[in-house]
Length: 98
View 1 (spheres, rainbow, N blue to C red):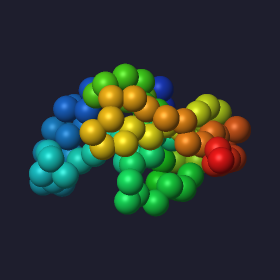
View 2 (cartoon, one colour):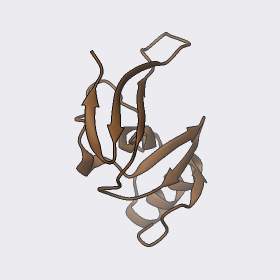
View 3 (tube, rainbow, N blue to C red):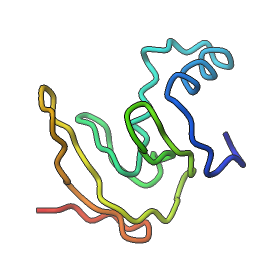
View 4 (cartoon, helix red, strand yellow):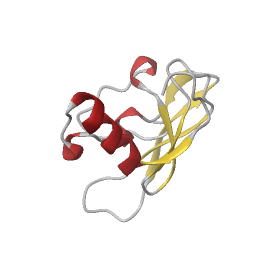
């Protein structure tokens, strides 16, 4: 997706592309693990591992690595219907909420 900053896509598109190009199993591709505004348990959260902005269910925007993102970071605990804000990016600087 290099050079495609700003493209909005469905998770199925990314899963299909990675399957075609690299033979990755669709179920092993989890775009939310690479979002600036999402954090999942067990995933190291750093600027270098971020590529996408979560837009809505199964929909992401590609912005690339080291993007100067500003916005809240959300986590949705397992078995919960609600998300909670756990941190924030301000011009690419990560701040955890206490």
